[in-house]
Length: 102
Ligand code: FES
Image (cartoon, rainbow, N blue to C red; front, side, top):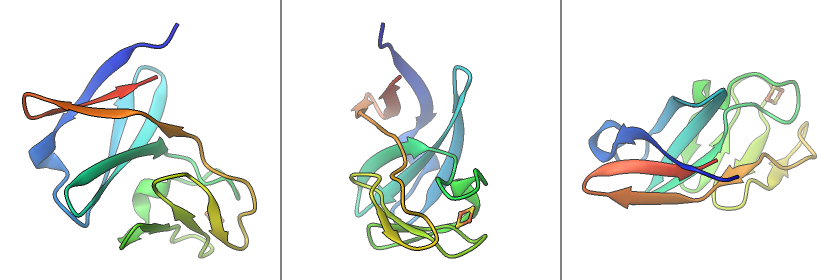
C-alpha cells in the first residue's frame, strides 16, 4: 500500500539542484526545477548508477556516467544511451518538508 514519507526539508533542495535521499529501502533523487520539486528513482535506467551524481539543466537530469538525459517531470529518457524511463514518485510539500509517495 502506498505511503507518504518525509524525505527532506524544502530548503535542502534549492532551485536548480539535485538531492539524493533515502525513502524506506529506495534511494530517490529530488530535482528542484524553478521551485517545483520532482522525485525519481535514484538509479539510471542505463546501468543503474546514481542519478543524484548527475546535473540538472532546466528540467533535464543528465547522468554523468554516460550522458543519458531524463525529463524529471515524467522520467522519460530523452537521450541515449538510456532508452527506458526512470520511475517517478508523487511529491507534496507540507509545512516546508518534502514528502514523496512510495
Ligand atoms: S549509467 Fe547513466 S548513462 Fe550510463
